[in-house]
Image (cartoon, rainbow, N blue to C red):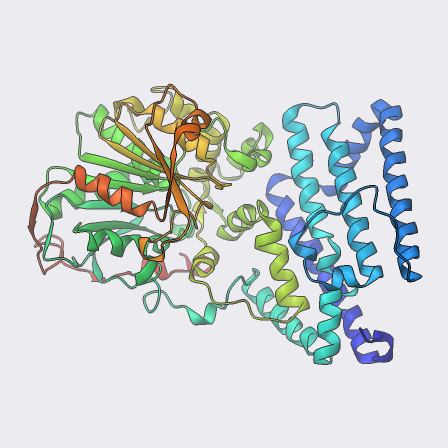
Length: 585
């Protein structure tokens, strides 16, 4: 690599870009910690105070760390002299951030990489041995990983050999392009994960034909145009999450679950939640059940003239839907012939890594903040979920966009991921208190919607439960255990990959695999997995077969959508889905 000091303009660019990136990283760390009242200085003060209680143990760990660093430095000097150093006492492990050959071929950067890895491992190991409560240790480990990921040498131009090599090759143009990308992202208020200019809602995502046939202040109800001559007499109502937009279920024709269901002969209705603005800032959790899901069920039944419907809920949409069916059951109504739950939690006993954010003080602060209404920012929510996989969803884009000056590749799923939604503060605070913190759905009648107690055991229709093995938002074992709260015949299918990629896995792609087996609520999830059978391809196919086994008779499809009392209001995907967070009223 050419010496950068021989290229003064690039040397200045490295310094300027490094300073800009340092400020970006500091701001991101503040934003990641802000919603949870975390101060980084206080965090490490807490670590030091706990460590001081066992000085001898701490000193021994420090001695081992310094010994490993000295060994690394000596081996680097030997290598710089052109000789072969002895094997390392602490072996280097694979890390995608340092996969490029430049990290190993240049002794200086090889030293920087290994020194960083030694420091990271030592600090996390030290925290793992602190004499504190498990919840405190998990919190310290999580936020320490956040900090270590942020200060990785790959995130700074002067310590990233890939970036420096690119700077020489482009004569610094990567830094100029990176600065333009940074300014554009600052204007948007978020990091670009994909080339958003390629996508437009209603143009090349969310394009399945249909119409809005009902709307309320909280949601629009979309009815889709049948694609088969005959359809099931019983419609399928889909309830997506209100976090992000519904079109995760209708990205593009070849990976649209909506289109797939239509092609299997189902008449599909779907809830499109409104992006919450100041006018709905006092909306409660009960409103999403009563004025949202229950209203959508009633309107779907009215339009289809069917006594019962098939239902599907995704993530929090599945939580809404199951609660709504329990409420209706308590009132003597059974509108659902089947229930499909995709990556849904009902039992919140294990919520995965997000538990490190949630404790009594955090929830109390949110309840005070939203006592009179307010908005939980979609950007804050998006950053929270991204921080659970920070290297993949934050820092890789910082390096790509700002240091390498590249535009992210077009990817419809990441376009959707960036199209976040605000939540009403009171609804969000209730969610955190009663489900995440107090896990009250596992207790019959512990919560109520209006004056109707919620007992999930009243839900008795056949249930298809899908979970994703690498899901970091809804751990698959939690989804498995959640189904045991229902008085239903349960079919459980486990898919490969994560929360979104595992769910949106079309049959036509023939990718990944899924596991099937006999569900027994008395058995633990791991025991189920031991005997489950792995099958190549998408879980969509067994779901479609399950739905066919429970489907109603077929009837001729109607060409007109809606009915006399529900004339089409506008073409799908409707107005609500197009509203961005900053535009919500």
